Image (cartoon, rainbow, N blue to C red; front, side, top):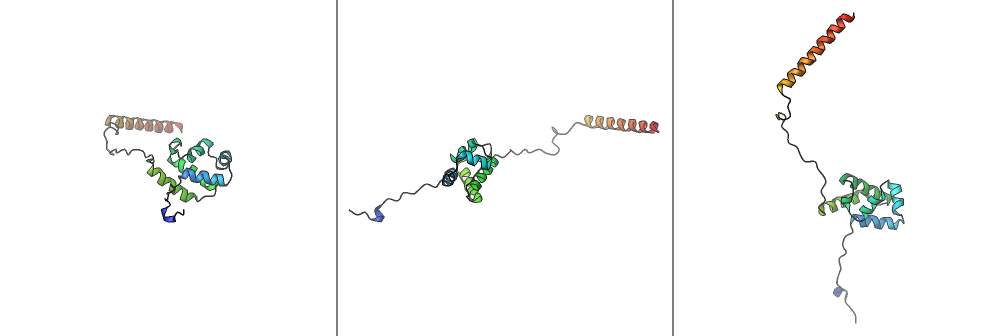
Length: 141
């Protein structure tokens, strides 16, 4: 009973995540996580999170990219390609880069401008300090 090649169901392999790809490269180089941590100076717990693709456990987007770049370099992978794949994975997974909310302050926002009384009082005190200094300097000679 021969099966034609056309009749064999084709199973599409899921693409590897960045973490799986890095873990496979580390296994090919026969490195332990502690060896990798020593070489990259990235804590083992962060390396484990990267391999599991649990990027929310990492301190932040910038650190995640830096840690993954160091990991890729240590296992002799193209760090630029890995970082681009990471960014794509993060955007697909719903992980957005933290951006501080924009604060729209008008330059003349009354809540942020000191009162006229405070401005005139500060100017008067500065003037008195200047006059006192000049008087002191005139008696010093």
